[in-house]
Length: 383
Ligand code: ADP
Ligand code: MG
Image 1 (tube, rainbow, N blue to C red):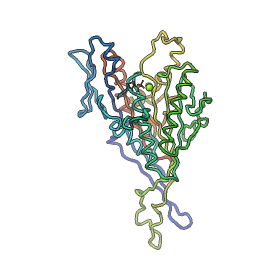
Image 2 (image 1 turned 120 degrees about the vertical axis):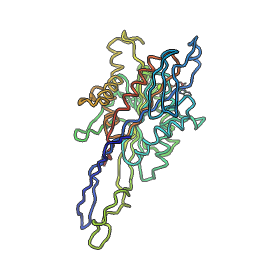
Image 3 (image 1 turned 60 degrees about the vertical axis):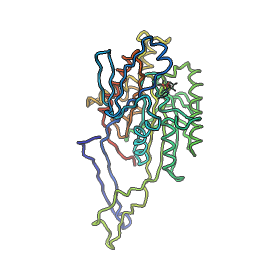
Image 4 (image 1 turned 90 degrees about the vertical axis):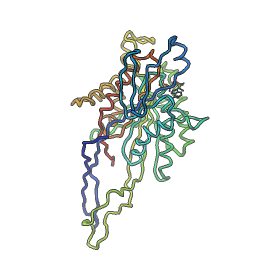
């Protein structure tokens, strides 16, 4: 990944109280957004409603290739970083797609894991599955936090916020009375925060499972109360980690020993790093009918689609190296500012169903994933 781009790593040093202190002033390393496709197993609906059922998807995992059949004679081939067939386990998907992001986050970088696809293709299954009865079914949210808990110590802190974005309004899924949370951006650093959102400090995995369950229940209540179509809302899990990181790799060269020959920079002294993991279960990628179906006016329909449409526009602009990236057009793109074209490590999972009935939607979902593969972020440590 990112071949051809030099890693930039600058250091500077100064003397404080007679000792050399080394500062890492800037670290930036290119990392392309990684994109995986996951095919959902055929379900009863696929079988029932397709009188002459036909699969339109052929998966070649070893070639990391996916063929979308147009008809009996022709098909289009697409390559991805990973291609998962319907039999891929939750564990495999986590390890191939999300684990590298989690490891980056544990080293102090920001990270994002996101699922994009038509409603019913497995976004929530992939990300949000609790797996209460069967731990092998656990999704990425649970596995990621489990890994973070086991890699951190009591002196580190793991804080969770869980939000829903619908009709350009952010609701707190852990504190349902908070229904219009503003986004705050630091003008200098561009750092995005949600100061109004409830932050819960995680104690252990059981505690996190309770948090997720509360969030899911609140999502259900909020959607009923606000008459939200849940397929049209984005769910965003934020995991903020504050952690003491040992910087062994920054050993000071020998000429920077002090006059007594002692190493003046003690690599065993940890540096405190703040990093953020975002796990985003996006709204269904299917287009709303232009006439405003589902009981919405044309204006409402536009508003419902705004965040997802502007995410697509930003990814297109980034893929084409356009000088203008319209991040400010929607709340979702403001929240994901660091995830695409920013300094985070990002993985995108594109979910699709097998049925030829949805050939057009599946093609447009796959094309979105192809464009996202062209986005290169510059990983940067956050001091
Ligand atoms: P989405 O969130 O994209 O609308 P869901 O995650 O709710 O879709 O999945 C739709 C249905 O398909 C659910 O009943 C889910 O349990 C099932 N499903 C999705 N992906 C898989 C999978 N890989 N294996 C088994 N069942 C799946
Ligand atoms: Mg869902």
